[in-house]
Image (cartoon, rainbow over all chains, first blue to last red):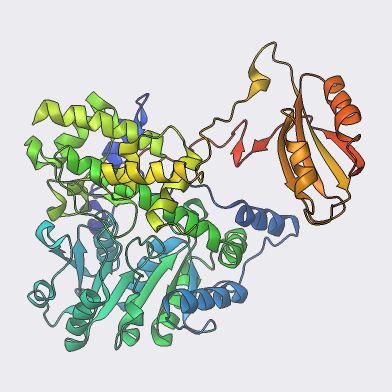
Length: 389
Length: 166
């Protein structure tokens, strides 16, 4: 075959592969590695949710559900969001059950973006935001939340980037990878900017259940925000259900109906058995969530204090399950640090640079692993740091 | 006894792992070491943290002999002291590992450990059923221990996650 042109679309060709991939390859082949590189809970989905999925299979619920998901599940989600975060959405028209929060982000972006429109993406952040904006035909405009602000974005930083093409601001609190959690006041300030310029807010609230010091404030619960917020959440983190791929998106009806068009043409519906598991998780999972939160909180305190004690300064993250220590004392780049640490001390962490420019100089340490493993990892990192600083 | 939230947290941590160091507990509860030590001592003195112990799977130890039985006991409570008096008479035997007052079809649940079925049988017939207040006993021997105090003896749940993920 005489291939003269590339078959790959240009925007995909130009897309960099995720920096996480390289570390996955490096770490996968090694024995005896303690991984602090995992972006998912170390809990297994509760037995009651797993059992509900098994039961649904036994009873033969193996066909499609309605496009936006089982009505029962949407009702339960509406109920949960209202009770837990005081935001109200109509199950019939303002909620779609998605294949993970990732798909929710994808359809949200595709539903709102015309070619060339811009989305301000607050970095460091989850690796898929900017690529998904690009795939949806928009331009991602990164803005860096800074260490000196505990990785919280300042409203004036947003102001500087807004122009006539700006369509939305994308935020994630509690944040992956920094764990930073925005207070009600800090969120309000961001919303004022959005209101002033008539922008949408895409709020990734997947870590909302994992908030340790203050009550969580949902973006949509803030006055004036509901109309312009696309709220994204799911079952992966709070209910330890990553592999089920079950998320949801809540927004005003016109936005949801637009997303629903994309959802129905590209996916039909989220997997049925996962929806039944999710339903059970919402109905009976509250105690499990409380227990998980308690356990994460203790581990957070342990790891943050340990890192600070060894000279890797680290702010106390308000949520999620990541610590984001500063490693510049070792005079290594975050990539070098992570690679050397893996090879010499057999601890896997993720270099902060893969999450955005301002992540450089930091590494992401997930504390979603047993306390025993964390204790051992901290010993190894301490020896490593002593050697190199 | 009213405890502070940090004291409760210490009790919860120790209940899961009694061998954890004071330093690590201090980090976990965001408290300095001296304060933490004081709180642990207080819990011990108040007999809230009663004893530090391990869960041992003796079934793995070759040559280890032992049987455990749970005995449902019906008793006549005594005026003025209720069940406490007969309970005390029962729990003083060193063979009795646990004793609970129950709601339902019987009154006391007694857990006995012995070297053999015979030894347990002898205890029941000679010591337990001869007590004045005891009306009847039903003995159940434990055949296999799957889970004890929240711990699964042969855990099959290994970490199935991929090593690095976003």
